[in-house]
Image 1 (cartoon, rainbow over the protein chains, first blue to last red):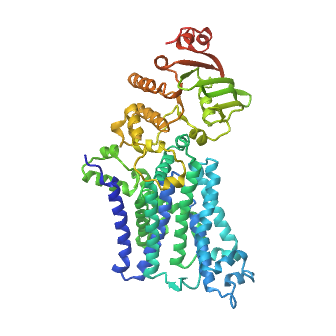
Image 2: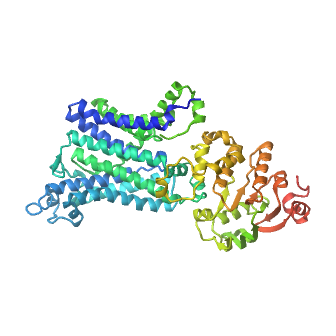
Image 3: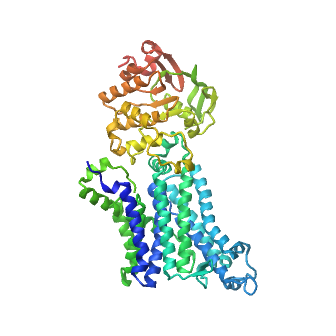
Length: 365
Length: 247
């Protein structure tokens, strides 16, 4: 009896590593700064999709607030980069603050003089926020659609704050650091292979770490909580504790995405805290297959690729196209595109669809 | 020695008392059946023991310690296993993974992040899958199991916990006659080595397994005794079994 190779763990790891090697080879194969920058952006989106796959696909927590971590980190990175440009003596205050009647640097901005501190805050603040926000929700046993509503409301609150605190965030205009990010004396041009490889490196490291984590006992318990939290609780596990950790890890991943995002676009505005981005991330994961990290990554690349190359005349109706894709996937491909791959591999490795279902070893990949 | 002791336990919702001054003592190694008409408070009683609901009054002691104030997972860690009325298993996980989740002495998430060993509780896994008859279905996704198999799997989950006290809420609900018979065999195997409290409506099943029966009515204890005593108790016949006797 040969099982579907899709459920074979070794084959899964090979597929993941193969994909990341392929992505890493892009700068060697194509000498196009524009393409590299575009693919670096997709890699960032893929990180966001991975965070959704973890929290929703594995953890059963439908968070529409992954953009909170992404956006907070984006602002942290933007502030770090802005302060790299400022001079402590001759020019200590960013120009947008001066035009907003701030003559001294606000306390909030002070730590960002130091790049290491700035980077640490960029990652730590969103992660810690997710721990606190998650603890509040999961301790109170908020679940299902109510999590979606709460995360959505929280996202809207952060958006309004970024928008309204104009002297601190430059409001709607956003912050455009004049120089690329500089680290350890090296300037990282957003259009360079270095920037691209940093993004792919982050994506690969985070994805493989999550994959490994989900193969541990911890991952098994997380998936059990997705199926039936009450049952897990009465087996002696502190369900809220597990949920907070998964939520925080997903926040951490989204924060890494936000950091990389500003590195490759050299700009941050409230759009990264907009509802559109967070909901799109959920759609990317659903299209690719939320039960698979690889699926979520493919979903992010494909949907964004489609948007970029669909042609200018269709850009106006993009949201309609995206919505239609989402409805189509929900109706016809509940396991996403990787569900098709699962069935195809099952067919070719000698199992019909129904049989594979009964011998499935790993539902999640 | 009494393993579980409920003293003067009440649970009120406003003016309504779902449980009203209930005393119940379960001894170690006993199999106790809990009977009563709908709304008698059987499930509420179990909910109070496992911490799913809080007692309004009275004490719940497990092996001498008061557990009424502990949270669900803490009570479970003290060795109370609960099977629910509506079978709940992890539908997207395989039978084996279901049992793996249930088997764990270590509940800390961070330590569990470092645990990759395929399955430490191998011996107990074999024993339990033998007992519940799901040995050759270990790689089946449990959402595909039949209703009876799902019930058995949940019993297996609870056993995997290695609890000192098992609470079973209608374990034969929705089962065919044959499945019920197999379940009674499982329970008879557990008898003696485990302490069980079983809520059940199926009288033939109760006859098959019970030592002592407790009958509840309107949140109160109505009668306690062996099956013959209960069957001949006029009060019980009145409130629960009707005038026609036990079927």
